[in-house]
Amino acid sequence: MLLDHDYLNAPVEEAFADYAPLDRSTVLMLSILELLHAEHAEGRAQVSLAVICKRLDIRMSTVQRLMTALNEQQLVDVSMQKDRLVAALTTSGEEISQVLKTA
Image (cartoon, rainbow, N blue to C red):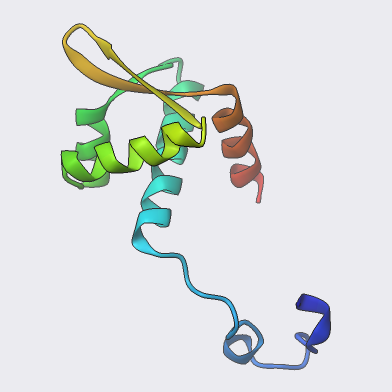
């Protein structure tokens, strides 16, 4: 617990040694949320999965797996539009993206 340790007087590495670093999937999911939020702010509510692959330099299979996880958490909607898969932030996804941006 944070209050059980004197974090102000301990080196950073020691102070947070109990916390695991974010795994790659988590970082990529946060990157997807950030990208979708930025596109939404520019007036593009939907982004194709191919664009997400290209911008984040990851494979389509990886994006699809991450989108499934984000969709299950109701943060992203994935749908077909003109024969291509597109993603859009849900209201919950937009709220989380705003919080992450201000953090």
